[in-house]
Structure formats: structure tokens, C-alpha cells
Amino acid sequence: IVQDATLAGFDWGSYLEKSGLLAAPVSCFRHAPLCAQWDDIYVGLKVEVLNTHTALPSKVYWIATVVQLTGYKALLRYEGFEDDDSHDLWCNLGTADVHPIGWCAVNSKLLVPPQEVHQHIKDWKSYLMERLVGAHTLPVDFHVKMADSLRCPFRQGVRVEVVDRSQVSRTRLAVVDTVIGGRLRLLYEDGGLGPSGEVLSDFWCHMQSPLVHPVGWSERVGHSIKKTDVNVNMSSHPAFRKVLQNSVPDQFKKLRTVYMGNKFFEEGMKLEAVDPLNLGNICVASIRKVLLDGYIMVGIDGVEIGDGSDWFCYHASSHAILPVGYCESNNIPLTLPPGYDHATFTWAQYLEETGTVAAPQRLFNTDDVGHGFTPGMKLEAVDLMEPRLVCVATVRRCVGRLLLLHFDGWEPEFDQWVDCQSPEIYPVGWCEITGYQLQPPIGPEPPQGQERSNTSRKAKPF
Ligand code: MLZ
Image (tube, rainbow, N blue to C red; front, side, top):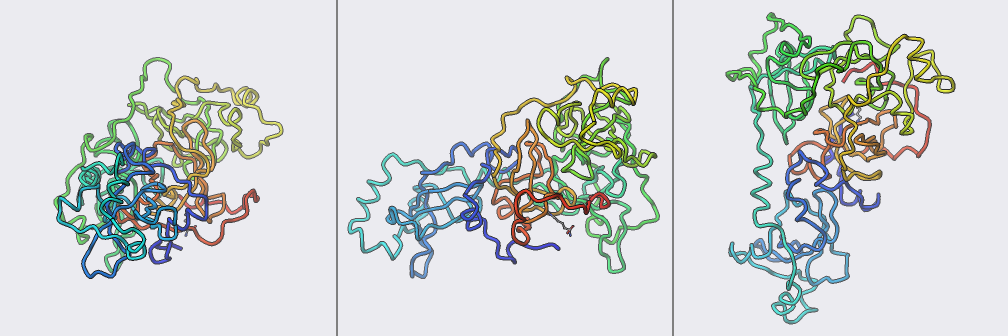
């Protein structure tokens, strides 16, 4: 079931009021528009905003104060209502007709007070003068910066290498079809078209996702790549009618360089890893292969098919690989290989009976990065198992740089561990700004602390 928040009438403002008004601040999301500017946005700022409380036929504006800030959404109170909150309005600072103080004067717009308060205050000019002394407002270049930060180096027709959703151990050539807010809809080059030209297989990810790479990457680092089936003809699809253009490393996020010299990860070493097909589980895992440039292939112990097709590529700097003992010391339930149970499992014994060694702790990127997330904060997050969907979500736990995300209204088995710097998480209001469809919570919240259900999502890769 896919729902459109706008059709379902989902409104972040009233939802947040019911749930305690806690949202992750925009400054937590490095890849999000205006992240760097957000230190200048705070409760108490005064702005000029469209006056919706007037019978005048033309657009007029009035001064308002930010009284709440949750993600990009600000709760505004028109000047003159003072302590009366009954006319407060939620607006998205990225999209609303909201401007710095002085904008109306410069642009010949009228400042007119709302009808309801018109009578109460006789001399508006001196009232405003008094209220505006020492007030702060939006930076003048707020909307320019917003537009700048929405620019994206990817266009329709650009070719990339991206994980093959039908076999996660390999990549596959794909072409950018759509770009929304830096998120790419990718069509596999041999994904095929249905009888009426519909795309049979696509993949969504943010342009900074670790799953997408420039053309030539797989060969360079030694990752397996699906050979394009030349019998599949995609040429009637608009994305393929363009002159296709290969993506280049400049268009991608630079990963932190890791020194691979002697004493790097080695085949057979044990670790704990986020299961790529069950992102709520951190499992007992093994290094299966060491590629170049700091990339490794990881397999989940005890559930591997055996032909390597379920190995997954992680970079050594990834949050998703953790040293042995990490779950125990952070009170996270470790998912054990079948046949083991929590009462008796110890890493020491497991290493001994498998004749293996733990990957050295210092190879892992578990540095505390000092993010600003705390449990209970709301955000918009990609369901990485169905990466087209950006959903209403809550931070459930913060452990080091990992966040456990819960999708509001969904069973806990949908929860996912993500990095605090994941490009697939966004502030409240991001969808509204970018025009991306937001998935509202489904049904009532399940009661807290219920048992995990047995229905596993494992069978459904991505
Ligand atoms: N149809 C799918 C959608 C799941 C999306 C959940 N997002 C948090 C299902 O029901 O499995």
C-alpha cells in the first residue's frame, strides 16, 4: 500500500502537536538544503508572511514571530495576537510566502494587520516599531541559498553503476530517469519494459548513497557487475532517448580514504554487520573478500546461500560494520547464526570453534561524530527496503553514530539502523520542499513494547 500524504490529508503540524513537537533540527542533516544556514534560524525570529486573515482581494503581508521550529516547519504567530495562540499557523520555511523583515518595503507590498486584531491596537506603526526593536529576521539570501542547495549534478540520461536489487552482491548499469531533491530514480539498462512501455525494474537512491557509483567503479575495485543483456531494448523509454552520458567520480561524494596497507581487513575475519536485507538486525558476520579502495564484501554467518550471491559490499568507513562485541557493549540484541542462542553464545567461544579471528577494532569507523539526534525526534526517512518510499519516522535509539529508525504506524520489524549522516534521512518538511511524495503513518501506532512478529521481510530484497 502506498499512500500520498497530501491525498491522505497528512499534516506534519498537527501530527507534531499530538506527538510532542519534537523533530530533528535541519542542522542535523548535512546533505539537506539550508543545513549550513540553519544556525541563523531559531524561535523568536520575526518574518514577513502572507496574511491569511484578511478579506482584501490582493495579497498582503504581516509580521509574525516563529514560536516553534520543527524541521523546516515553523509555527508562526502574527504580531498583535500576543499570547493568543488560537491563530497560530504552521508554515514551511522552504516553501511558504515568508520573507525577511523589510522585504515588503523593498518590493512594494502592503503590510496589513489581520482583521481580528485590527481593532485592539490603535496605532499600528508605533506598536510595530516597539515590537521590532532588536528583533532578528531571516537572512536576506535565505531563498537564494535554498534554490542553490537544490541544484543537483545529475540529469536524465546519466549512466551509473548501482546495486542490483535482484542480486545484492553485484552492481548493474543504470540510467537516471528522474531527479527529485537529489534522489535519483534509476532504470537498469536491461531492466526491460512491459507491454505498454512501463518500466519493469527501477531503483531509487540519493545521489550521495553508498550504493551508487560512477561508470567503471566495479571493474576498478574488483566488484562483480552484471553483464548488460543486449537483447533487452529500452530505447523507447524517454530516459534512454537522450544521448546517454557516463557519470564521473566528481559527481559523487568522496569517501573517507582508508589506509589498506598491511593489517587491513582480511578474508575470514569476523565482525558484526547490519544485515543488508533486514536493516533492523545486526548480525554475526564474516569478511568474504577484500576489494580495492577500502571496500569489502561481507557475508552473514549461518544464512549464506553459499555461492556468494548474498554477499554485500561495504566500505571500511561504513557505519554498518562493527567490531566484535559492539552489540553487547551497547545493549543491542545481536542476531546470531541459526542454532545458537543468547544464553550460551560468546564471541570468544565462537571464534575458537570456527578457528577464526575478530577483525581488529581500530579498522572500524565508530568515531562519535557528535550528531544532534535524540530518541523521539521525528524525521522523514527512506524505507531502504523499498527505497522509493520516504516515510514519517521517529528516532528510536542512538548508539554512537547509528540511529535506529522506526516508521510510524508500522511494526517494529520494519525498523532500520542507519548512519547519522545517511543521505536517505531528511528533516520534517523536506518532501514538501522538494515535491517528493511523503508516506504518512499507516493506522494507529502499535502499542509500545509488543513482541516482534515472525513475518520476516527477508524474502523481499529491497
Ligand atoms: N507494501 C509494502 C510497503 C511497506 C512500506 C513500509 N514503509 C515503512 C508492505 O506492506 O510490505
